[in-house]
Length: 242
Image 1: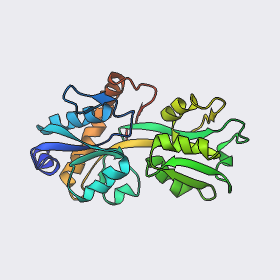
Image 2: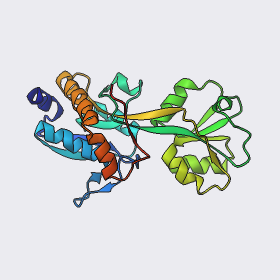
Image 3: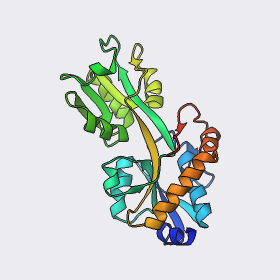
Image 4: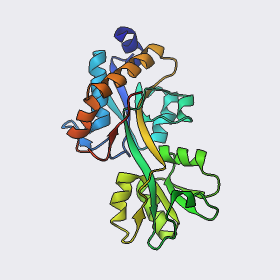
């Protein structure tokens, strides 16, 4: 199967891997050659090694840009969160890790429970096209989403416009909380953003290969070892076996 998978996933002789540079948990540094490094790139390199080719990182500034680029043949596999909207054009592996998403509240907020979030009049700052933005879009009915172009600017807008809620990944919110004394982060999470590996839907052999590879990467401890290697233990969790 590897031969057919290699023909589909690495037709140019290398595995062109789209990486989301905005995910600071999966991209934690760079190699001596200046290429992106972290859990996501290392996983791609392991996939490439199994296929018998080299991996080349193709950086994108956000997950939305990775998903859009499926149409211009600029990458062979993409390391982003699997979401129903993205799954219309991308075939995803099972999730290999997950990140908890939750809410930050400003000092003095009267909100004490997640049931009080989706209420008319509440404005929620969120990084546009992030996986948790897609989840909120599908699940909220009354609160207003205020979409901003970056994680940093979602916090800035939350503060400057006196918004009622900021949505984000828990590790990022913990950092931002230090800039706003008195702000609180909810203990519960509204979703877990699960990171997967995607490829073109017509690449059936490639899809089957990625499904099997990720299953083994979880069960063998490879994912856990990469999380430990890159110092994101407690921020990233190994996804449950499918």
